[in-house]
Structure formats: C-alpha cells, structure tokens
Image 1 (cartoon, one colour):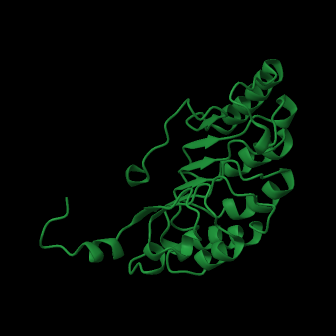
Image 2 (image 1 turned 30 degrees about the vertical axis):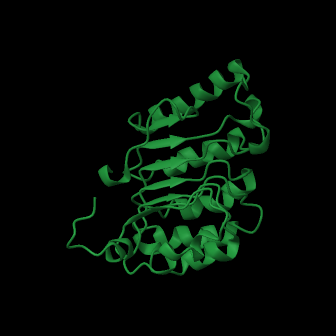
Length: 218
C-alpha cells in the first residue's frame, strides 16, 4: 500500500526495478521507461517485443551505467542484437552483477565476439546462458578466461551440442541428453575449476540446481 502522503506517480518515476517481460508493445517506449527520472538498477525484458534499435537506445540511455541486473532472455541475437548488446554491456560493465542471456540463439561465433565484453564486467556475479547452441571448445574458453572475474559466483551453461544440445526452438520438456558425453564434459569443466583454485564457482547446466540470488543481496 502506498502511504497517503506519497504521490504514486513520483514513486513510479523513481523506481529502481522494472519487469516488462512478454509484453506486445515496444518495451523501451512503454511509458514507465520513457518517463523515469532515476536510473534503473534492474531491468527484465524476457521474451518481449524488443528490437535492436530499442536495445541501442537503452545502451545510450542514463540507465545503462546503473544496471545491476539485466535479463534479455528469449531474444534472437542473430537478428541484429549483437552489436547493441555489446555496447550495452560495455556501458554497464562497471555495475552489472547479474546477466541472463538464456535462449538467445547464441552460437559459438557469437560467444567469441561477446567474450571480451563479458570480461570487462568486473563485478559480475551470475551469468546465465541456458538453452543456447554452444559447443565444448568455446565454453571451455569462456570458463578459463572468465575465472579472472573475482566476484563471479554462478554460471549456468547450456547442454553442449556434442551432448545432444538442441537449438532453443527445438527444446522439449522431456529432452534427455547423452549422459555419458555430458558426464565427460562435466568432469573436464570441474578439472578446470580445480586447477584454477576456483571450486567455489558454481558451474552448472541445470538451472534448477541453484536458485539465483536477488540482485539486491549480491
């Protein structure tokens, strides 16, 4: 309940956290975003009608350097989102704690392009890459390099293509990967963590294993 002495519109204009997931309108032109007077710290745009021009707008807005939590899952990165996403991550690199890029059709070449920008996100705690068509080699490269980020706590990676991982549009609820290949991949990833002294890092393909923290508690 909003206290009687507070103007609801003022509260709206000063909010820090906003979810505009699955809405049919252009989310960044939606009044709550266009009228905000304070920068957002948390923005969720899962499966929305966001287009590349709007993501570019966001990257150039005063919200970008303040973002701590960003959820862009469900957008096809191959449809013009790669460059504006890079720019947005660069602008948010000093503040970003949580990033969700699940089901974004990120393939090996996309990850290679994004990796240098991800490594600039010095405060990143949680990275989610579930349900993207990625293979072992680029994920190993990601893990070995992103271990440089001292605050990193959780990484959720997709079922590898070598283990029967599918394109995001092809995933089924009852999909069963090749368990033998998956176990071998897990062992290889675990050895990298042991060798680097980062066994504290949660590296998992099952997003049900660990509940991601609220960004306010990060």
